Length: 458
Ligand SMILES: NC(=O)C1=CN([C@@H]2O[C@H](COP(=O)(O)OP(=O)(O)OC[C@H]3O[C@@H](n4cnc5c(N)ncnc54)[C@H](O)[C@@H]3O)[C@@H](O)[C@H]2O)C=CC1
Ligand SMILES: O=C(O)[C@H]1O[C@H](OP(=O)(O)OP(=O)(O)OC[C@H]2O[C@@H](n3ccc(=O)[nH]c3=O)[C@H](O)[C@@H]2O)[C@H](O)[C@@H](O)[C@@H]1O
Picture 1 (cartoon, rainbow, N blue to C red):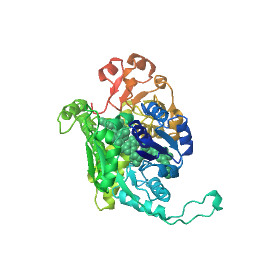
Picture 2: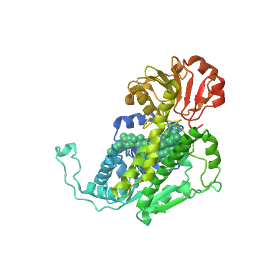
Picture 3: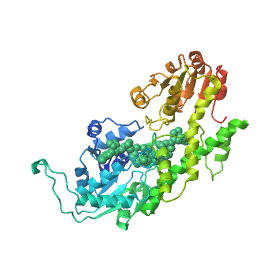
Picture 4: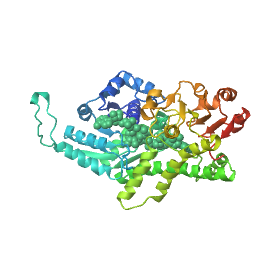
């Protein structure tokens, strides 16, 4: 099938590359022309394991191409994916301006051929109907004047439109996005018509109707638009709540002398609970959990419902970062004038994404308290981090960050941090305190090297 993907961020690039890999002809479009030029040269805008190789192979096979022309994509593709960003506004509601702009422009370029317009961006319940309205508005609005028209906008007679809106939420995780896309737990389709559903079944046939007998079909959930939109928010809100829950248990464990790692392991053996997303730590961050939980609270408010559980999920997460500072204050007393080393800036390992990264929030609080903060991350660069926290010092070596530091705080559980020689860490660190904000180091080994180990909930 011919597929257009509008927006080449995480979701757009990974979706486009994976659909091309299974044989579709994919046109990836972005209005950031510099990004498109770099993609054409094989330069990835994000760090994502396996993505660069996948994109290169798809481009070589002729099934994947990049453009900054929406008109080209709408002209050629039967299925149009909207994958632009939907960040939070200051009040927690989602900023849908990019979706609005894309939907209207798609409308301007549509002709009378049937198209399926797929919302893959995470958008609030009701957005399917809203996107339909915007596409129709776009089709009625004047098209931009071509140079030859003397700069005068042309009022176009609206074509007779034949399109359906589909909601197809995305569940990939950064750091394992390619693997997740080839191995999803389910595919969710919210469709307006049987015709649109059939198009989506064909598009995802590699997953839902595999030809190879040894591959198990991925469950396909077909539902209405509103339910599909809600499934995405409910999934993220549930996972965020699960982490906030274990963090709350961790805080009680600390006070009563229990070990949250053992507690999580044991409750996770109950199949009704499950053992994933029970790692206590400095809280969740990233480009999705914070914005999606806030957006769901805001949807509740819009419809007269107070989301008290989700507000608690947010509040626990907010205080969890502050606990890192409290632990340092307890061990070091005065923080003013101290040097603190931070290992890990990304919001989780195997990504260079620092959107709502707990590490940057902790670094900012420490700088405000009068500390010097020296950080290391295997992938996040100084330039990237300093856009958000200008006074942060970033070293290319994890061990160099320790020199002259009064304490070490581990904020991202990159595997290499657990593999350092702790005798060397102890020799370089001026102070004795190690705050393990991700419970990823071995307490006995840290203590054995003459250091003071401070974990989360243990
Ligand atoms: N990042 C993730 O792991 C996941 C994200 N999502 C959702 O998917 C959506 C996209 O997220 P990301 O890929 O992280 O976003 P992103 O911010 O990385 O990328 C968005 C892309 O859209 C482009 N764009 C913006 N306006 C445009 C326009 N008018 N025309 C064409 N391109 C335009 C931007 O230049 C950018 O390249 C969001 O709604 C997000 O919540 C869902 C699941 C996973
Ligand atoms: O909607 C989205 O964008 C995506 O959001 C999350 O994916 P992602 O944000 O990439 O990362 P996660 O692996 O879910 O981690 C989120 C945060 O939770 C933290 N976390 C995770 C697990 C855990 O046990 N404890 C914990 O503190 C991580 O450190 C990280 O800061 C979801 O897991 C994806 O299914 C979803 O598609």
